[in-house]
Image 1: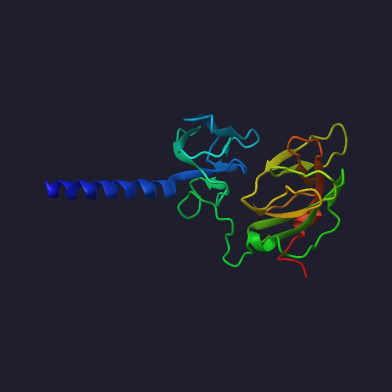
Image 2 (image 1 turned 45 degrees about the vertical axis):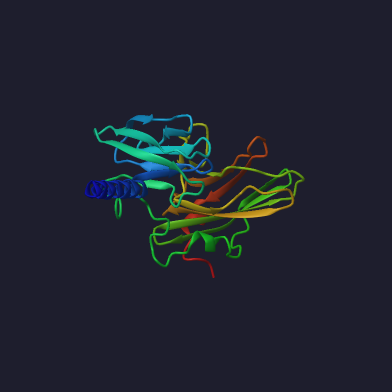
Length: 267
C-alpha cells in the first residue's frame, strides 16, 4: 500500500512539474493595459478564443500575419487561443494574465531567434535598458504638441544595433488629470496632393517603460523600443495620443531625417 502511494506521489509531482514547465514556456501572457502581438509566417485565416469575455484577439488588417491580443479585464483563470495560418499550420496557446508582461511580442516565424517564441527587448547585451532611457536628459526640442494645457514632447530618438528607442514626455498644466492607454505610432506618406497615393502602416513597440497618464499639474515619461526603424524621404512617423473618455487628443510628426539620423546617443 505504501509503495503504491509512493508511486502515485511521484507521478503527481512529475505531472505538476510538466504543467508548470508548460505554463512557463508556452503561456502567452497578456495585459488589460498593453496590447501583445503574435507574429506568424503567413496570413491568418482563423482565430478562436475559448473565453472571449476576458480576452480579445484581432487580426491586424495591414499585416494579416500579426495577431493583436489584449485582456478585457484582469483575470485569474487560464484560457486558450488557437490560430490557423494560410499555410495550414495551427497554433494553440495557453493565455494568462500579467499586468506588465516581460515581452509584448511573440514571434512564431520559422526564423525566430532562440526558442522561437520570445523577441528580446534588448537584443544586444550592451544596449540601453528602457528603464535607463527614461532617465536620460532631453536631446530633442522641436517635436511636440501643446493643446488644452497639455504639452507632449518627443525627447529622444536613438538607434542602437537593431533597436530604435523613442522617448516621450508629457506635462499636464491643466486642472484635470490626463489618462491614455498608450501612444499610437503610424508611418504615413507625406500628403502632396489629391492624386498622391497615401501610405499608412501602424507599427508596434517591442517594449515600453513608463506611462503617459498623468494627474493635474504632474509630469510623466515613457520609453519605447522598436525593431530598427528607417523612413524614406516621403514618409513621416506620426505619434498619436488619444485621451481615455475624453477629446484632448494630441499628435506629433517625426521627420525621416530625425529617424534616420539617430545614432548611438547624442553628444
